[in-house]
Amino acid sequence: MKLIIGNKNYSSWSLRAWIAARAGGFTFEEIRIPLFIPGSRERILSHSPSGKVPCLIDHGLAVWDSLAIGEYLAEKAPQLLPADVAARATARAVTAEMHSGFQNLRSRMTMNIRKDYTGHGHTPEVDADIARVVAIWNDCRKRFGGTGPHLFGSFTLADAAFAPVCFRFKTYGVKPDGAAGEYLATMLANPWMKEWEAAALAETESIPAEDLYG
Ligand SMILES: N[C@@H](CCC(=O)N[C@@H](CS)C(=O)NCC(=O)O)C(=O)O
Image (cartoon, rainbow, N blue to C red):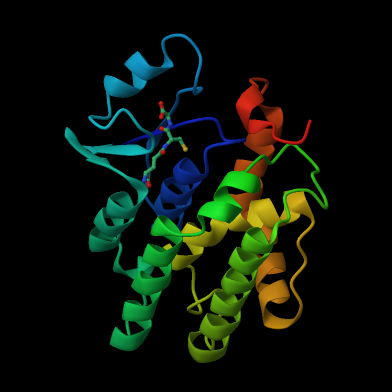
């Protein structure tokens, strides 16, 4: 198995697929292609038909888009989705909501692990996105989190979907109270998150358009 990813500092979609693969216990070769430099588009297209990362290659089969990659991995590692049907449906719903929504949060609080942008990025629309994330985390922890520290107890695709939001909250100094705050602390201490963070901190490439606040 090979996983094509972008810069670990910036590529939030790559993190989702990568951490799902780690949580599923897969052994995979990681091919990191720094984004937005000469040749990167051609390099990505040599693996990924969409021209985007992440893309998973399994025995010659290309699976692109983080949502599809997560679902593919969960077919092989069913623990990536909750066993209970209601929990599984909710995990898919919050994962899909993350995938298709939160545009304000995504555009004004981009993932940028190396930076400390505490206090930056807030608008009423961003704060509404943050409030919705916090509501999802509190609701999932309350209704489904009983057997462990993650949204649905053990680590699932829903946690992978929100992993970049956890790094964003750290970068921008967003500190939820209560269960959501405890969940954030759990995620930021997670060994796979730590592994990704250390690699992001060691990267030297910058994407100026993504360094929003200096
Ligand atoms: N919906 C896609 C989004 C993929 C995406 O936008 N990837 C960005 C990097 S995070 C990319 O490949 N950008 C390079 C480009 O557009 O040339 C997913 O979930 O995988």
